[in-house]
Length: 287
Image (cartoon, rainbow, N blue to C red; front, side, top):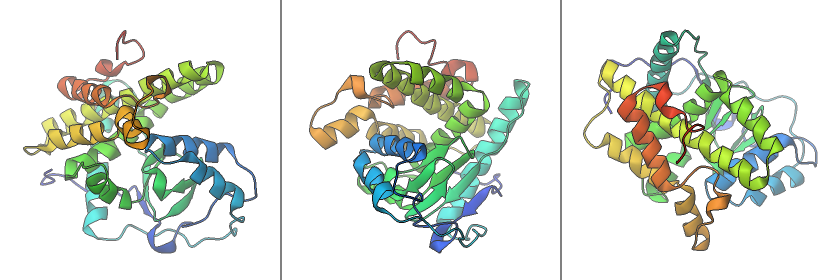
């Protein structure tokens, strides 16, 4: 990726090194809704959700005070994060204006190990995630090493795709899509709820493609091989790929994020069009 004409975002909160509640699980000995939500996120990344649930039950309550998070350090990884987040901000500000809407920029939180969120406790083992309750994206940067080694998806644009996907969830939240889907899932059977989740996630992949198309057109951020890196990352974290790695076979009815082929196809669809209208997975007859 090229950042010759790119600024760095100020909407990054650094909780690494013990600040901002590192290692602090939810209080008490029960399992809250936020913990359950994050356990479902863990399933997406091929992590046993019982790890999250057990930690919530067994861990003591956190102390009320924690050291405030400071500005992000000036290391290469955090600078990259700030550049990518700024690109999403500039791009979605423009797209929202074109559609007569106002874009509210999310905060991206860097953490190590675990951290408090409005959705429960974020765990490094769960990978990056978006919490709609506080409109923040959470990333433990060790995930990028996992992306490279475990998922065999190296490259800076593979990392940018991960951020763009989570920001895509923020866009869905601002547009009211996430709330409607959650309400529908609560009334649905497990199979139907999974199918709705797949459509939501594939839309976030498509929105990541919309971002890439518009950011490159405006500021020329893409280099040769970048799109292939994103597609490799989408393939690596498809539900079928993760399930086959974990148990040797895939169960489509249990998918919550979509197959590798679906994730690649919707990212490419968003990138080919560059338009929000191209990402209506909920009206698509076939995913």
